[in-house]
Length: 97
Image (tube, rainbow, N blue to C red):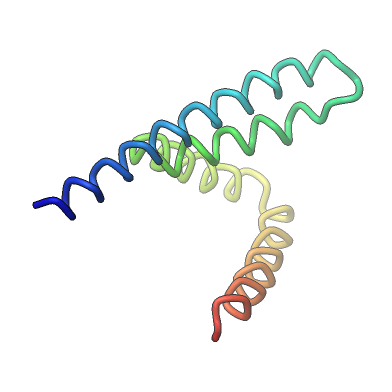
């Protein structure tokens, strides 16, 4: 019982931290759209990604937007698929013991 309470508390804390960080990045991104020294779009993308980790609904919406982007811009999607493959290879090498 004690262990399950600890795990649920950790998950709840993680979700709160991810939500606060996600919204903070989005606010910084909105400011970055108007301020020339901040990369607004980058901060917004990071914020949306962080929100999608903590929320299944946000994750589904982000995935739907990703699929729509790939259908709308097929040439960019081809490059994106190559980048994803390289990224997955790099991550898999880091995870190996």
